[in-house]
Image 1: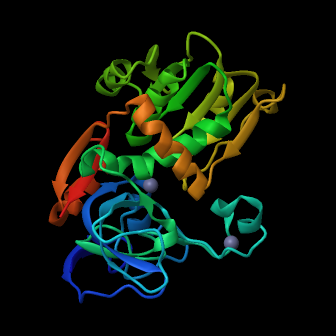
Image 2 (image 1 turned 60 degrees about the vertical axis):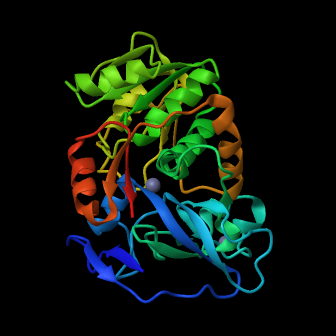
Length: 327
Ligand SMILES: [Zn+2]
Ligand SMILES: [Zn+2]
């Protein structure tokens, strides 16, 4: 197999020839056909997340076909199309795993971070954390659903069912979530970098009732806001934009420091929460929504060996929607 490997944080990924591995007990081998590029991959690259596997193959929005099945795996077939998300393994016995909060597991493994991911021609996965995908939708279009879609979905559920929803940062996750929110009859208010008229037009094209810079106030108070951008300065701005009792959800795994702010912004039962990872149930719930909503992803395709270019373009905001690598 071949992979784009991060040998150490802060360096470029290197095209590397690796021996093919066979799946062990409970594992499957997946021939990767598409892998989305996520903001979290940049945090892995930049060494902003603690204790990564090193060297590591990044990538956690993996679509592929099972080509070998290890001992003890049930319910999956060779040739079947599956998706592998960020959550790659949980312990199954900690207080979180046994109370429906496996997203907070004490001993988790994450694809593309603490175990090898999908910037490769093949990967080995814990079979219990593979989602059967069926055959609807091409592999490239489906890939961004596996993190941007899934984490977006969990964030939306945690944001509650208020009608006016603000989305700060209109990238891969928000462009999927805007379609879900609109399908649910909500009004989407999109916040981009100030002056990003391209991003604001993109958001309006996906049904946002209003789009503007993150330094602007929406025309109506928000019931909830989800922050996808990695900018801590957005937290007080979003708190200011939500009504009394409103909720602000931070959806990213990493964020720059949040500046201090007046208590008045939190007063009147405004809530500030974060979303961490996903549960397998989130994945099943979200994937069941996809055909109902008719989600269309906007993707920019890169060859796997051009992964560094895709990552640089993501960092610079040079495309709309999501980047997807194709081996
Ligand atoms: Zn656990
Ligand atoms: Zn991700």
